[in-house]
Image (cartoon, rainbow, N blue to C red; front, side, top):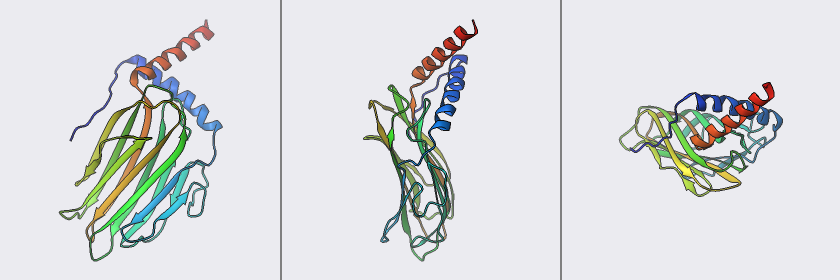
Length: 229
């Protein structure tokens, strides 16, 4: 498995992140609204379940947060799905993320479940960006052909398919060269044999390249110094 990541060390980047996080807090606090997030849950041979942010089936009143609960989907017991979007993004990231709890195959045969999360209208962060995908799985009772996978995308840019057959984590990062508005999508696929269970968490994130983030932080620090002078 090839894992790519960008690493920048030093006080400059830490200062940049601190300053950018402060700016992000102001943006998030001033933009609380329902997003265009859509959560779709499909089990092989069954009709898809579609839940919109603040729409029918979403038990969370918080904008940008979809909470869906149901005892069973076809041959699966899928008790809780929580999906979050921060569209249109902020100075340090645009992100969709989701967590599923107690995915259990309660049928007599193997089944596949697909959970798709999408959102549109992301405008931040600005140019010089990267796309990251993070996947964590806790798996029990898996059969020989069981697996869980994640495919993340920003517009037409895809991260490598992340497949886990044992519990663990996986991180992938690729350049994202599109300029302007973008959409995010994550597709989680779960194949379980009877009695197998999975607990999953996934995030799809666009961030500035480390060098760009450091420059943002340096500009902010310079502004603060001028104000103090």
